[in-house]
Image (cartoon, rainbow, N blue to C red; front, side, top):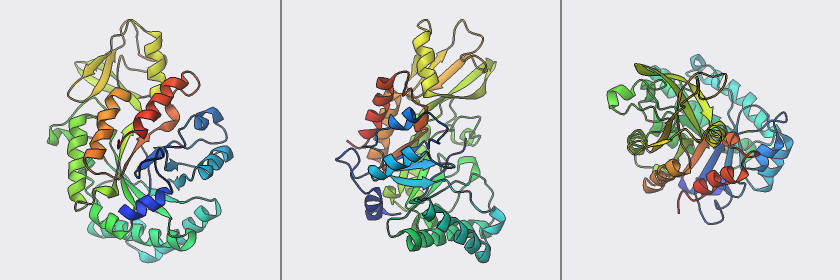
Length: 348
């Protein structure tokens, strides 16, 4: 599941947000959820623009969304297409890429980039090249956009996720405003290394896995916890069971909400270890028509609230989510608002 972002340091992060979150916080709320001109504008109109500090997106944004972001001093962070890994160790190729990407971002009114590379087994030269790419890109962004330019790096749910083990301290010391911890996609079918950690779960963001991942990242960045953002899932996972559970794909929060409303005979169960909901879609050949899976696992306000609290208790610089687009803004605005209210209160 691909997601991306870009980052700076404690004092810089406050300046980068440009305002207090929810009027009284100084942390970051990073929302993945760019809406294009082809999407229903009621989606981005339903966002809590008084809470969001940064919006991450792929491709181009709807003009109305860009206008709302600028009106509320929300930073526009493009999930830029990174240069090939084979170019990272070559300074001339890094410079060539930067000289194309940064002016393009400035011309479109963006505030910075999010890097999201999700491979593993990097060589020592590639590891060093990744850190250099972060450092040089940040410097170029500041030169073109100004001192509040932003860059972050998306990272897996724990430092060793899929044996990536990047140079995380090098990234934050080199100029990344934040590392965006993708505290989702942590199910066995996405992260096989959970076997070695003993944290495997059917939950996208099981609490023991999150706690271990956050703790490890705080150590990996030499205690600079303010450089970390904890991203959490606004979606769920579907499974079929044939002796063991088989992953059948993701499902949006809006779809989960609608299915539960239409099936009062389903009996959601609370997993008190992982702090997540799950349900057997009884009487159905699949939970959602046209998709596989007779079992759903998902997060909501109840399950996310203690996970947001983990970010606060660990001294992190903020929280975020994937994906803000997928709430029931039209079908049930109150349910969508409740999710925004929960994340707005993450550090209270």
